[in-house]
Amino acid sequence: MTPGVDTSSGYSGTPLPQKLGLKDGQRALFLGLPDELGELAVAREFAEVRVSEWDAWRGSTGWNFVHGFTASRGVLEDNARPLLEAITRDGVIWISWPKKASKVPTDITEDVIREVVLPIGLVDIKVAAVSEIWSGLKLMIRKELR
Image 1 (cartoon, rainbow, N blue to C red):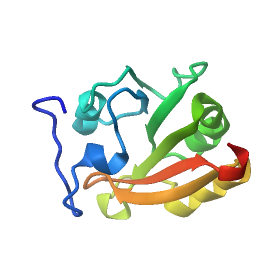
Image 2: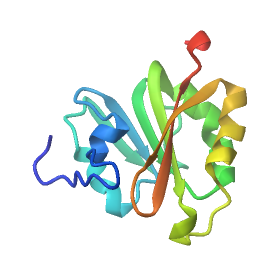
Image 3: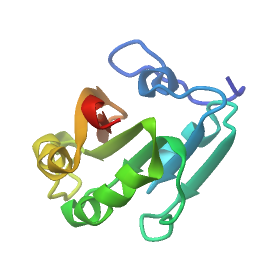
Image 4: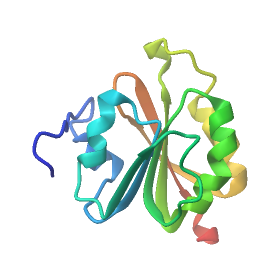
């Protein structure tokens, strides 16, 4: 683990990089990464790491780990299939959205994420508190489609 990285454990007692499944050697892509969570991009010795906005990442593939932060259903709808195509067969996608208690304006919820991604072959396998503002849903390619 990189010295100085915020590994706050939130409610579970598990450090956030561990909770998210970040590992040394991964190719990691972060989309819309909030400033307060920017240290996630240096939390491990990644083989490659890229931090990008939602409108500037397309065309890159072979990611083991993708974590996107959005308050917009439209952003998720526009990017769901490209994200599926960007990860390795055993890769993971985390989609984080603002918690209701955060008072951040949003039209996305855990159920909205499922509504968008389940029909394209992704399945949710974990939900987690990412920060006081963000919740996250972990997605993978459905087993029979890998």
